Length: 230
Image 1 (cartoon, helix red, strand yellow):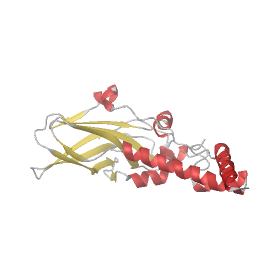
Image 2: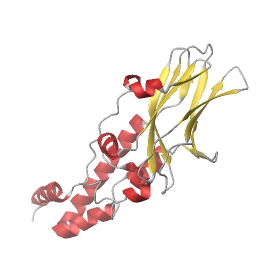
Image 3: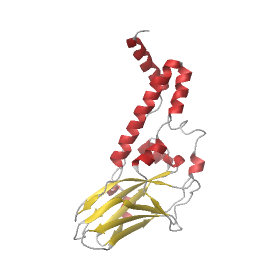
Image 4: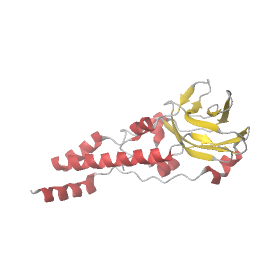
């Protein structure tokens, strides 16, 4: 088999066995979310809106996977300096998810979230064996490309830090690691710390969460990717 025919054969195998994909819609801005608007918290002229993603249907729409099965809770955050007269500094390290005991769960880095959500090379190797030895390489290439898409998508949508002058707004996703048995969000809250560049005191804005969820341990399929890659 010459090299050209080999690559054509690999591409055909990818189409049949390279099932790993990533097709996620971008979540709407919270300025269009009536519930988020109603629950908005305002402190010293700075407004905070949040939306917690935990329904499987929303997960599959906006992340192409049920991230809670991996213990990841995505929260969309909107911060607006409506009328605070001075510039405030927003650092994403100042975002925490606080549990009912007061324990702070820091925001996950993009690398941490992607490492949990990425597709498995072992599954790809399994596809390759099923297709024959020539299926291993294209299947693993397919998984690698899919993981790059996941990384690019998550990084582009994660909330970014910076200066918030009066009238400015920033919005994006934050990912948090949550316990396997988490079944109720009541008592949990999102906390954001902002720094006034001309004052030693921090501005702390918090918003409570609520609602029951299916615990991560009950959402897991038999293997990590047997539902996510279909």
